[in-house]
Length: 126
Image (cartoon, rainbow, N blue to C red):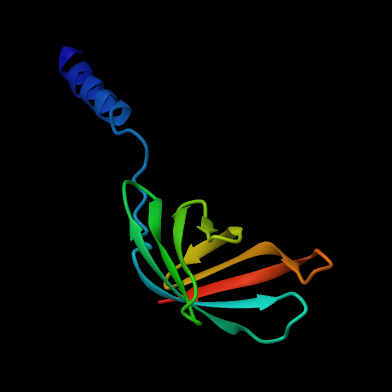
């Protein structure tokens, strides 16, 4: 009985100490960004995002706009798909998903002086 109890105890302790599952997706790299307003039919080039994946799923990086006028910090989480881009004039909170070498998400943005809110599709590929 003792011989059987010791291996079972060892397996139980090993299972308990394994901790949280490891997140294995790596979103690090240079991503080409395109966006499409809900009222539009085609994606427009928006620039590039350089991402670094830190501890676990935490992301940091920068967005360089296609017109060269914006260099903005990016923070996010590869597991939840949340990205935040903070520029001098706006904060974009993008909700989406990473899958292989593609990220697809959406955010809301004001369009024009009327303040109408438009849903924008944000797509990144690497």
